[in-house]
Image 1 (cartoon, rainbow, N blue to C red):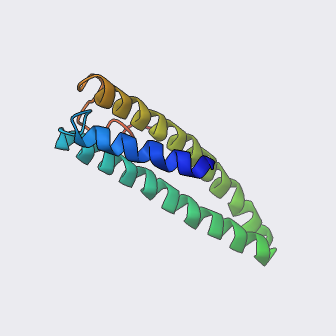
Image 2: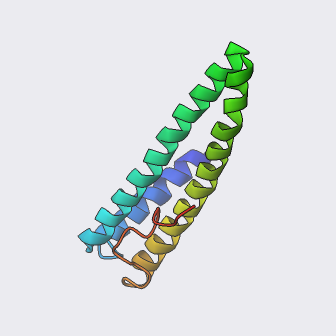
Length: 115
């Protein structure tokens, strides 16, 4: 039941966007797409880091285990970065969708923070 309601909500949002609720701004959609690609890039890196950590752990070699410290620290930083990027995407999209283009920076605001 819940899934069906969520599907309806998404469909209604898409229809509203097509009817002018922010959907008339191709630059906004391009920016959103670019930001999601940046997030995906970090998530892909995290996948690679997790595989490296698993490989090092399974090797049971002291040197490889010590390398995991830096890998896990990078993974932790990347998770914080993804949270920040999603927050920026949400803010930019909400502002552009509901308030004209207020808050839409056009420059890929999500993912530009240095962490």
